[in-house]
Image (cartoon, rainbow, N blue to C red; front, side, top):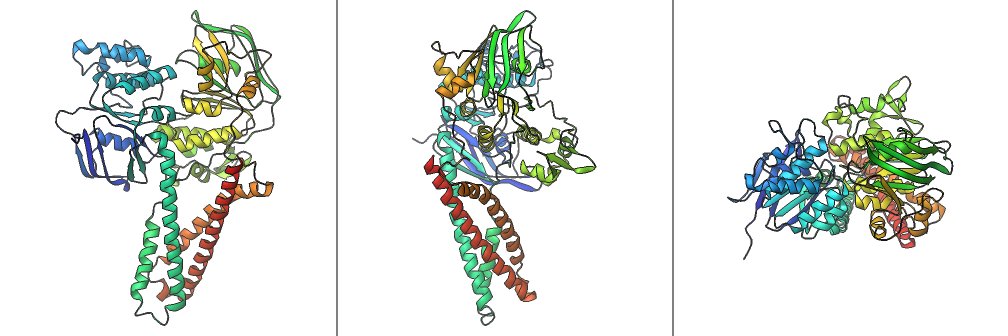
Length: 608
């Protein structure tokens, strides 16, 4: 017997600021469904989830929930006015004899339910909202970035709780490990279209790449048809103008179809550039101890960090990871022990609290007012790794359109704020990166790019993150802070730490670097950008081709816009002929460049 759906969306359309966010979106959520909702930042995932929750009214279409079905939504910014404590808020919809569920969720998520909402941090308020949803146990749970602000212990608890629940759920998350572990189906929101695959997130990237490959094939077929018809129009229209008006109209329709195709959003054009090399020894800590109000943060901690190390710090929230970072950077003095820095250090810091961003400043001001980016006498220029760039052009590298340049920082989403901080960070040369929770709110494609950039970075990286997949991809050694002042160094990333912690596998600290052991036990992952099987010329060509392809695509788009004018041939046949020939030439060059890139990329992949 077919299962009655818990939720159905039928032909949902919604515009945002005059532009369509998505149109004719339909989907059904059944009992027991475990669905990942994925898409680029700004694609409308959170808005679609709020429509599912009944909090946003679409322009057209219908949301249907059968009588008696409860749909629960974890609010990102819960309204807690009138509640004396986080626990009172979380239990507000429960019978008194069910309030114990909030206590259980609070223990698993790691927050004190007795704290007043007025003094609670943003992370504590979000954990209370998550506890409220888990305690209420609706038939369908909608969770938007539930792992943000959770430490790995809380993420593990949430993962296990969701694994055991009988409820259906839809998840938005950047945490690959979380999505892989829990989901059985995937909804993909891409350029206003919602697609569904009855397989979990583990298969998403394979599916996405196949869809894009098929899309590219269809686009190339349409381009070839347009080229052939355009050539016919130039060579044969004069003698057969009247009887071939239908064929001309078909050409115009094909051009209109091609122009209407929505281009895929590219990845941010992020780049990291190391400054002058630091000394071989970057940071050395010996016998460091630190306590606050009698609570030990570190006891007799020693480590030597060498140039090129990627050191991850993991542990529960509040255990002191940020404090250890500040001690290693010389911002906080230890109670005992010493910290010495090597020579020629040029640090750059990514702040998890986004405290470096003024919410009332515009994106433009955020970059041009930065002392390290300001160009004297040029109000519209910023200094990017030693070269002046127009501020709008640099913002576009990080996927901010020109229309957002004068928008206030407070209007940005979490992912957009993270990208803006990365824009500031990556504008300067450095040889020591300090990244405190850089992965929060970033979409999967941007996370991939950041991981590759860190892999190719010549300097040293200190990283705090709760993203287990990201830690495995980046870290070569992990400092595990497990409370009561204990901090132990292990080889490799999160999975290596988990495998080693069962035995006596701690790396020696002091004279032996965590990175030295990490190199011996866990070879560094190869960057996707490297191509050891190619000659130097081929490697250089492989790096140049994406820029050439982008330029050709832009020129083709401009020419197609010119030729889309239906009266151009009658009004100016010479211009029509020149534009058509130029279009054909550039399309041929584009096809050749794409073929060359594909050949070189396959050769590089085979060599790896």
